[in-house]
Image (cartoon, rainbow, N blue to C red; front, top):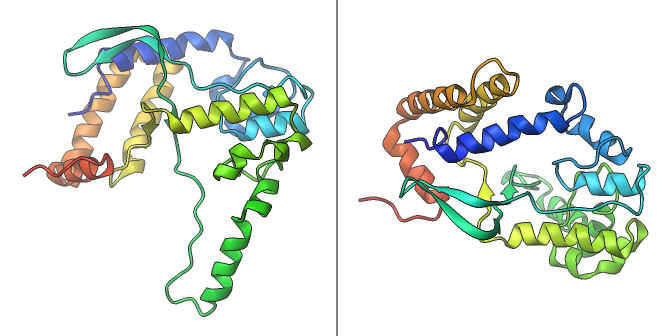
Length: 247
């Protein structure tokens, strides 16, 4: 059963909605392409986006030297779906969101130039070339090799030492976190996410109450799961989470 309409998700959506008061006008219609120039240009104090924002702000913006990066905010209270109660912690517990899954390069099995294609893949992902890609704005490439985090001198072309430490530290902490949240990895992912985005947009725009939006999502997700086959979806979900199959 979907957990999207439990008290934890409700609190998250309510907090998200309250945060709109601190956004510039028209923020609900902004995508990454709209948000990044606002941050890089010093029009907003912070944004939530991929790491591209930091590189763009340090190279194309007006806040060079003042760019900082942080792990997504955590909470000292987390809803426990098993006990149906709030667990309390002395310090905020973060759950970084590893969205999208990253870029992928592949060579078709029937390629007539497979050797050349793999040579290209090896070249563009090499330590030398990738070190240039991650510090170049608009490549869409964020740190992904261990060398990107250890060879800090590569970052001196765009960042101050403080900026580099903040940028790399926040990303590595996110990747290394034991509480990372991943995209929903199920057949029909976009059908589920379309419902989610539609209902959340209604709630954020004030068209429906947050709980109503989440209840609608849960109901529609149940319909989708029944349509795809509940047993098949459960098996796919457990496999994606590294859990053993149910017998």
